[in-house]
Length: 90
Image (cartoon, rainbow, N blue to C red; front, side, top):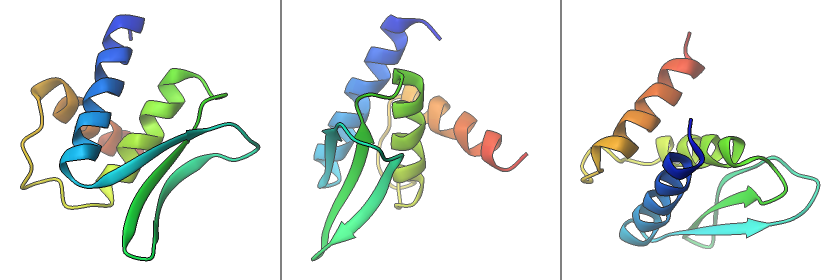
């Protein structure tokens, strides 16, 4: 995937996070990242040391744990999440 397309998808994930009240935390460390809920607040933590493609996959995995079927997603973001979902269940 091109770097421009990856950056656009990342931007769309941040917009989705705002829409769904999910805080995306971008941090450094020795961790994979993922979705968590603390005191009724939803978070997706991504490791900024990891390559952008891995960060996008963590975001897709996190949002797949939430009900995104009733939220409007741009076609490019919907396709990315759907493709990730198919990869996980091959």
